[in-house]
Image 1 (cartoon, rainbow, N blue to C red):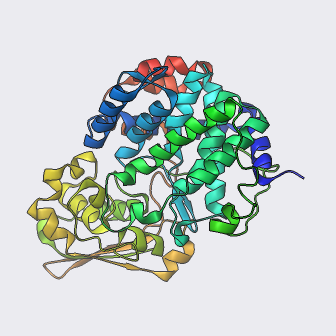
Image 2 (cartoon, rainbow, N blue to C red):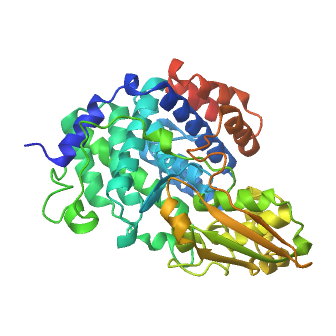
Image 3 (cartoon, rainbow, N blue to C red):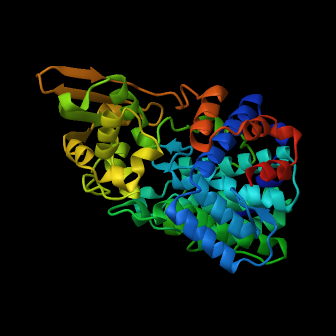
Length: 441
């Protein structure tokens, strides 16, 4: 009888570009472009520069391209490029009832493996779709956040499957890779609670790099625990509890349910930011801001179980604080990387304004999550007048997908005028991966 990892490996091995619908292909391209825009826009970040310096000092064989220039080994390219995609906290998300993840976090590893193996754009899209499917379905059926574990835990299985697919591993090798990665990288949720650090943006790239390394070991014949899911002290018993995914019936369409960020803000804040900007209030007129929102947003970024969100001093704290994000949006009329530079965060205007923002959960909105992204924003002005709006989604949510031209505008805002990269992604199925990576360097 096949183990769970063998079934997942068989799914990965048989996945084909032809399995992707036209909608899924189009959405994959948009997410590749979105992730690359985030990466190119992050090249000047302090943690990113530190990682680049370390790679330059440590790396031996340099076979994979680094976004912005240079080369490194596949695992370090996975780390660096993954860190670029993640650093701005502007890349895509997937919302399950008990879990939130960022599936484009897998791009750094899948891109490195695809370049290493000299794959086609179709191969890259297929491998990335596999990673998306695995991570999203495990988020649906095996959430771990409430048990104190981070979403990088399910991500280890996604990276293992996606990189194995990109390298062309057979089902047995893939099962070994899944066993090694799934057993080794069970990360703690403390990364995203309390006082936040750089590790919030680097935990997934680190896991992806380590898993890439492990998949190459599987390629050389190293074996991993076969019963990583159902075995004694395996994933189900130790962390997730019992769940069932029939990998024989899975497709590659989950990418169509992932969502893009319109604003440079934590994903659960998007509709609230959209709402407060739509009110067009002047900061000097604001007396108080009341936000009712679904419970996941309240607990993660609104001051609920994951800690107070009014003590904001760093980028990592700011982009996970609803009070800060709404305050900055009201004052500056936008929420982009410029709102997270240190001198902007500590200015008195936004520090005073964020303390005028009150956040509380709303049971009706919670019941409608994740099918809706509902909230209600009420702004009380100093004149006594109140303004109110109650959205249920935003452009970029799965009910209102971001179109290609809007994705290009976001890419350009982050990366500058680089039409050759956007054109390459638009035609990704007709080119080699190395043609794309040459443009990125």
